[in-house]
Length: 190
Image (cartoon, rainbow, N blue to C red; front, side, top):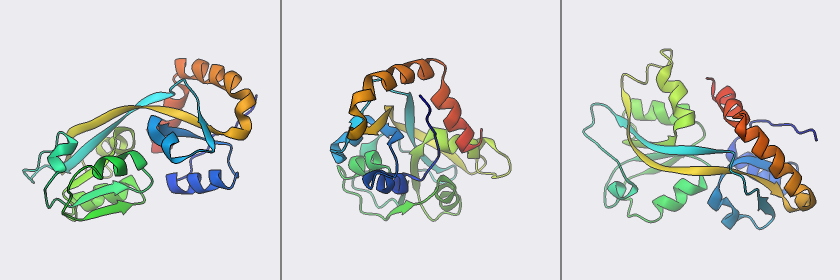
């Protein structure tokens, strides 16, 4: 069975899947199915993703749990299309600005330039920027705390229901070889 794996921004991939330009999405959290009745979640997670809170080193702000954001005037940035983060933030009284950005780099730059107080994103997207001297983020920013670690699943359109068992077997094999993690590291530049 042949397949093509490509990186598409979250919102765009969601729209393309709705109009059946795509067959599925590779990297969505378990709860994504709540938003989509046209998809099937494969039972085998492809990997686990850690979401973290990032702050400026000189800010005295420490966020180690979602509840630390409650009843604050903190300026919070998140990447557009991350429904899990949106759902979590709705549980709290966020009085400061909440800005949705297109890229991880935008979030890190805004944090570095003191245009936000907290940036929430997944570690797999942020780490390459913190480790690369070209960006100089690690001298200004740090991971304040881990928000959550979630299993990430592959979702396919329901029109592929008949082949889900075979695809799940392939996912199990590829996961044991860390195929999906290697693909993601390749996309984020590691």
